Length: 282
Ligand code: GLU
Image (cartoon, rainbow, N blue to C red):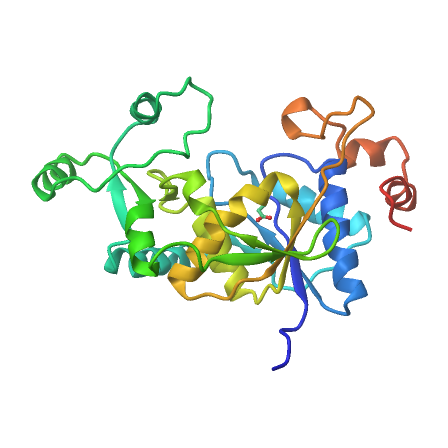
């Protein structure tokens, strides 16, 4: 059996300008692809129409090119592929693996007994009785689609067979997936009809991604994504979660902290070579 050709990607959301943390992540993936003589793809994760802006997408392309990266064309833009995600959801729906959730965020938080701003993901619910669901649908009440962990467990005969290879920091390890810690995750949001986990899993398969190289802040997401791959019959890539870059204050770079952007760096004369060197890339 021949191994799948090496292909990796950088998948930013155009909700702000890129900062050093993004540059580190993009360079990590890009250099891995170069070392493996593999493919490097760029994917714009713009399903959240309320937060994504075309000018941020344009800036992402410009900043990555400035950094010296090159990627295959066309760039996959998630907002242009909603039908792919709808198809995947329909396949799960046909097998009873998802259910409609009409609850508001507040109701979910109350249900799981957590303070606001805590992770709402660890919710576990159940489909409504058919007459109740029919009534809410007739009222035009909005709903999200959630993955049913109970139905998924039954369909797969348990989660014990789900594992993935983590080939990040240190020797490669086989990790047992624990999708249950995330609860019944939302696969399709009320507003946009799709959500992060579903879109990522569908896209990684469609784009032939063999290695997912991303920050360790997304390591937890892998467990749910592994389950979705199993349910949708998609291949499981190798995962490489890299350390998160921290600033001089020891904290990780984040958009919300107004981290200095790559555009700011460029404006004050920092060269791509200097930034690459600072980030540990020769
Ligand atoms: N769009 C995600 C982010 O910006 C990354 C998704 C992924 O790499 O799987 O955090």
